Image (cartoon, rainbow, N blue to C red; front, side):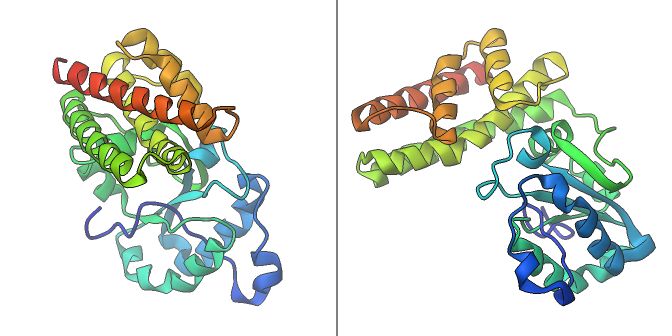
Length: 263
C-alpha cells in the first residue's frame, strides 16, 4: 500500500529481555496479548503512537489458536514515521506468537487511500478492536462506485487465479481443499463490500455475511457455506465430492462476476 504501508498484516512486540520461553506461546485468545503488545509499541513510539488496532479474524469472532494470525494496524503521527525502522526486532519477536507483520500508516494516508483500497479498509472497519488510542477506522465512508469497480476487479482476478490453481492441482483433492480454504476469506471480504454497496452496512460473521449475500443477490449461499465447512475443517467430503464442490465454487464465482458487471 505504497510508501507508508509495510505489509498486509500485523506484527508485534515483546521485549528481548522477556525472551523465547514466553514469546513462543500462541495466545488462546487475542486479548491475552493486548496489554504487552501495547506496552512494547509505546516503548518505541511514546506520544507519537496514535493508535493500535487489531483487525480481521482476531477481532471478528472466528480466531482459531495456532492457525489464525493476529492482524495489527499501527498508526503513528507524521513525526512517528521516522521511528519506522526501530520496530524490526519487535515485529520479529511477536511473529512467534502469530502476530503478523503490521500495517503501518498515518491517518492521512488511510483517508487518501479509500478510493484505491475501499474493500480492504471497509473490511478492517467492519472487524476491528482498538487496543490503544484513537479509532481511526470508525468514521471512514466509502464511495459506492469505487467499491463496485474494485469488487469487479477483485472477482475477475481471483477467478483467473482459481482456474490456474485447479490446473496446477491436477485435480488432487488435498490441493483443492487448500485452494478453497485459502481463497474463501477474500470472497467473504468481497461479499461484505457488495452488502455495503447495496445497504450501506454488512454483518461481521463469515456465515452471516454469506447468508445475507444470498438473500440480496443471485448468490447460491449453500456453495459458500460448504466452502466455509471446508475452511473450518468440519466437512465430511470425500475426494470426488471435493472436486465437485470446487467446480460449483468456480461456477458460482463466475455468475457473481456477471451479476456485478450488470450493477
